[in-house]
Image (cartoon, rainbow, N blue to C red; front, side):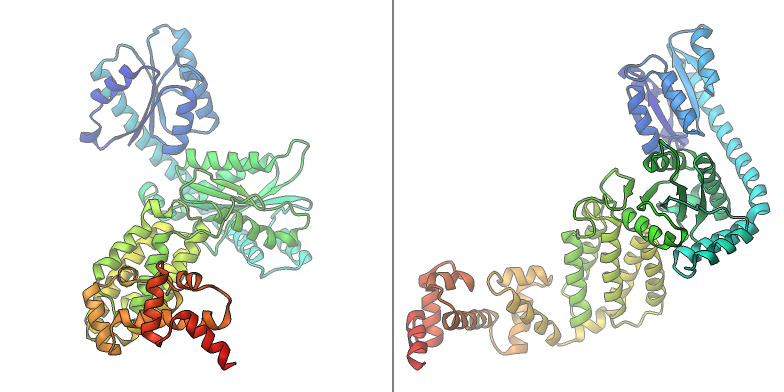
Length: 535
């Protein structure tokens, strides 16, 4: 049970927290607001079940705050606090659906009794809503499912002919826009957990409630709403672009506010470019999807229009994800890994909120898909991993972020258990091959420490393995690679010895010349002159 406290006096906040036995009763005080405007933001963010609010406050008073909640169809209970006892203050509060009215100074027993009654009433209201919604859902299920199927086929591009679309819609008594419209793709975040927690796992009840809210909002403007049957957590609204003061962002904001306050569900909305013909619905849908998927995890932005996406959308991949992919690639391609714990730790770092904050949903899809595809090529003996991989692929496409994160943890843990013994028995030849490729690509800056860090290997273990596989020391091999590159630059460029030394990883030109002479028997200038003489 989540409680929000709204009062401009710090002492009242402290008193309420001291009086309310939140921890003992399993309640949670989710926020402290000191004026009505701050309270509005917290209601949207925390979705409280009970709001305890003062009447007289700066910026936006308690009554105006309650009017805002009533317009947004807030379903929780509001308990009003005031130092005024006459009805000129209490009567307006009750007209705004206040659950109860308490006078300051507060009496602890009266406060606890009022909160308990509010909790009981919330439970009764919830059960009553579930029963009413369930009855209506059964009656409308058939026709609604047929409409959803038709529109899902259209946005998937399986029905393209405009006449065919209108004929099929007319058979289902489905009104489609005949002129300009926008398509709003509404993605519901972590829906499976939400339905389990608040709807006893009954998905049909939630779908019915969400549809009713969306249809009621669009009824005034005109349009249609459907659930995309190809995704379990997505609704699509087709909004007619008509009227002098039509603003698609206004309708998108109303949809978002209603979903968050009435159903307590988090939603992201992508809006298409305005379209003229209904056979462009497929294009409009994918524009909405693209816009929605550019929203980043670490931003408070929830609505994006196609063509107005944030800069660098779809181009951000956190360092942790890149390192995780390299480490997993090392395991899959070489069959060798020095630290299983290091791989699991890197996975947790990649999945951490801080690492994902700069990523968009699109970035997450790309990074998670690469990871899943790489794991699919791993050699293992687990029968469970292929099933989890299939579930993870579906979750990635539907952007079920929490589910995908849980599956990746399970898959990685099982993968390591399955392949650890086999990996430790391998000679390491494949690993050394990969390291050589890495050295040849990064010879300017690579060293023993960077190799150990990049491939998560112990330095002593790596040196011993390199010597065993190749017959030479790693330092000798690195020097050979750098000298070969230096020879190429001396032969094919006009760079000075100093410039070439920097290019191949040496900051000291004299030391570079000494190493070059030891390798070739000549100084760099002598080597270049000999090449010219030979020509």
